[in-house]
Amino acid sequence: MTTQTLVRIPDLGGATDVEIIELSVAIGDVVQIEQPLLTLEGDKATMEVPAPMAGRIVELRVKLGDRVSMGSEVALLESAVGDGPAVALPQSASAPAPAAPPVAAEAAPVVAQSASATPPVTTPVVDSTPAAPAVATAPTATTLPHASPAIRLYARELGVDLSRVAGSGRSGRITREDVNRHVKAELTKPAPSAAASQGGGSLNLLPWPNVDFARFGPIEKTPLSKIKKLSGQNLARNWVLIPHVTHQDEADITEMEAFRKAIQGEQKELKITPLVFLMKAAVAALKRHPTFNAALDPDGEQLVLRSSYHLGIAVDTKDGLVVPVVRDVDQKGLLALAEELATISTKARDKKLAPGDMQGATFTISSLGGIGGTGFTPIVNAPEVAILGVCRAAMKPLWDGAQFVPRLMLPLSLSYDHRVIDGAQAARFVAYMAQQLTDLRRLLL
Ligand code: CAO
Image 1 (cartoon, rainbow, N blue to C red):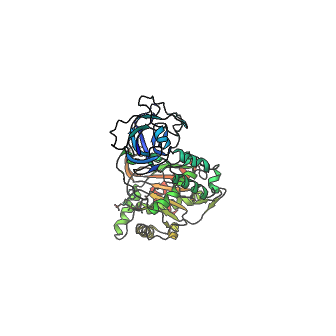
Image 2 (cartoon, protein in one colour):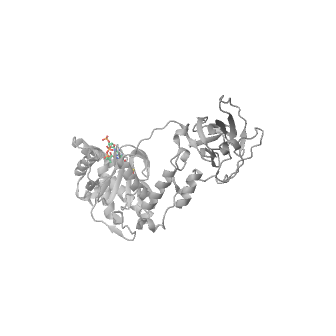
Image 3 (cartoon, protein in one colour):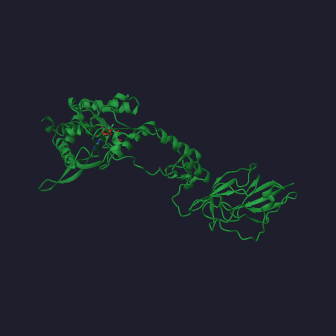
């Protein structure tokens, strides 16, 4: 003969409406006494609800995400009469239910109540509230990572600090796979580079927040493009390792723009944008300030001054940002540069750039002038030491000493590696560039 036992949620120490974040059993499963049936997550702790006896799950009355309180029906457990725990568990319905001890409640009292559900005719149903949660995390430790007791034990055995593991389970819960992944990542981590160790070792950052966004509304996941993943790693390294400062200035390009329009009128086949003028002015400024046309050695000890002028040009493609290099800008005229710019941006957008097309830059320009903006913070492209950001020129009233006159002003944002370049040098560099742009004749000097 079999008996059916109605398993209920035990006393949760006063907590109510607690969410089920893990269901460890399904209908038909045979469970052992104390085997976790489900995991609850309260405000301050996670806790498992164990089986009060051995048996087979014949009915589940909860699902993932349900909220439960003491006495909520969980499952019908069928066991053979004569199984020790099955007959021993039921107790009086009026028995008070002791609160679940907050920490590692091992021999917690068992509470059972008489069945309120109609029992099947042939099998007596016993209503049972299982032992209070077998293990609950300390309620005061609100920052404890979410993980079941079994995973905590597993992490302890491996010496893994769970606060450094990103959880991929529901509500950021840490799974066994997350622990394994963390261990693997730690073991395969490259030794910190010389540049990184200059700063005094690991950054010891918190793990990336793992949010279950689906809980707040519909979502869709889309993988990052290969370019984004690659450039993202470079950008992250450069942002973290280089102490950036961005200097902002403006160049009066009123005359330059008139000249650009004039030559554009003569060149129907070629698009001549302000960028080619910026490239020439940048070379003039780099010649005047050689520390900007340089690279920092990996050990951070030496500056490698370069006497060629190869400019990286950031190109926006639908898959992400790429930075092809225009070589020997000092030796090329505006028209040749315009032609080359058209070629490299088409190549970039058609994914035809070869790795060699993106190597060897001595300085980089990132122009958002075709789009807009008044300033931004470009990220230095290591091992270079500076990068120029350009935004859209706009007409502004400028005081000429007697009156306001309308002038076309071009915003320039120079980010630099402050280990190599000082603020005053940066201000001089940009002012010099602006001078060249304002009066292009200076480029001939
Ligand atoms: N002020 C006003 N107008 C500008 C301008 C500026 N600073 N720069 C460009 N323009 C105008 C151009 O003259 C052109 O006008 P027309 O359409 O009338 O001819 C228009 O804006 C579009 O220019 P463009 O963007 O096609 O050409 P470009 O030479 O300025 O730039 C390229 C080429 C490849 C650099 C650009 O297309 C690009 O991809 N820029 C994005 C780079 C980027 O994403 N940087 C951010 C990286 S984060 O660090």
